[in-house]
Length: 246
Image (tube, rainbow, N blue to C red; front, side, top):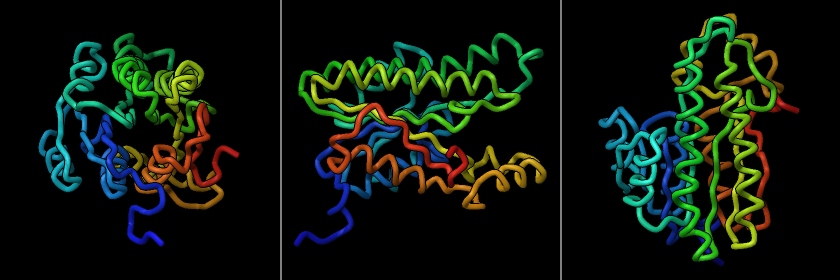
């Protein structure tokens, strides 16, 4: 019987690109895929020191790129090499009520969160289809399903990721390539630590498991969807939210 940490949901011999991987959920995903045996490339836009430190811990390499730029996203995928796995986690927030939301805050969030995922998927898809193998996991959010006041731009971008991924799943399935979504609930990151105590309490009261998620909770779900154990799963949205969305 096979033993060891990579026996279940092993990614041995796979090459993975994770965007937005310098910290938080993206960093946890990169480290989890590396623990599963994958060779990991960490994409990042800023925070070079954090990205390089995470890459060293993962035994991989870091590549700077702005995925909201189509040419830069293509360069990132090309420099990452022949990919077996693509995880789109890059994202940002520019919160504000819609009546006062500047055009640039709308565009910046949509271009990074949604267009960035489209650009990298487009760049990676042709090689995956040619080899008739590969898995894509796009990170959405519970707010992409339910919305959130003050986050019209972020909610729209995360809802768009779900539609994009379902379309991808249908297009790529005949060539043996899978595409799925992980939609986290409230996860303990820098963003959630910065919100008020009252808002944190409200979030917890609406979460049946009565705790915030950890980045590693999301990373485990991504690892599963990347693995052969999920070989008959495509076009799905996996909520990692402590029961918030049920």
